[in-house]
Length: 470
Image 1 (cartoon, helix red, strand yellow):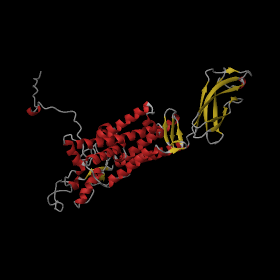
Image 2: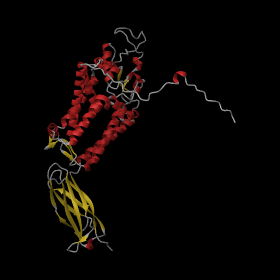
Image 3: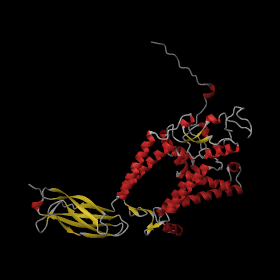
Image 4: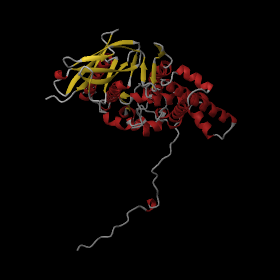
């Protein structure tokens, strides 16, 4: 048996009593105000989104709110169309289309969704603006937070949080207004007549907006949002990403404006750290592509401003690709991007066709629990309950017929009138002479067609049950 060699402790003496923190508390990020092209694009996009979100809910259409998700009645009004739970397959397709659209945008231009149109980012920028107008720019806010509490500091803090809560409350009321008519909701809220659930959801979404955009901010983007995790695997070397050009920028260092910095061995980066100070997630883009980068291009605007002041060419930080940074050509058209584009176009086309050809009447057939019976004429009779759902936004008159068996006799209402959005139920009987039954179980079809618009029609299959046929 071989002799075992004792294991020696090779841990450095200085590290024997060291501890490792598995949790790091959040460090507050103080962003600096800036201007630039991409900031203007973000403001325009955010203004458009705010206009859609806060404005659409106040539009009336055909006597009701244009966009109204009426959950109690299970009616979902979107302008001239009314959707029902039976149409939820369309919602599934819409979500799939949105997912593929996000995949396509990510492969092409990285996380531009996050930087320009994600609600978390948009509201975070609004809350940062509230900080600036109440507490000042970056250095003033840092100085204010270090000061002991005073009347001036308390007033500024209260002003900031008042704006935060006001924006959050307005957002919550608007969101709930898509489920409860907003005009009635606003009056009921301030008169105390709103339902308990309305107050609960308004409070919940107020707290959620206030917490996410005011306190959590970049923590949502970095840790809570799954997109930050899976988007990186969708990038390739031809994806447009916000990047720093180290070939041009290194070595970094301060210098005078008109100095011959190249003779000093310096690159274009003056190491002013403006790109870090304007970043909403607090990263240094010069360290390379990072999961925390949301592609907002704030660092591009800040760096371009510095380059302009130094009389250097813009674009030290820019939207570019890894291929471009390494000196190779960028391929805009590549198989994966083309595949997503083809799939997206095909799904959008099919979705538009499905919406355009969505039946505006639904017919459900419920057969009676009694399989069959014999009527006074000696015929075999089956009883059914028909449910006609008028999915149009106007009252309609419908004509009902049934076929599938020779000699089938229809007894009951042949013409009914259903109000807009109404589900109209009524019983009917079908009968047939026993000798004309080909089998004990027979397929039949009910037809419903609008007398006002013949293009509005639908069918429903059912069974006609009879005695055993020998």
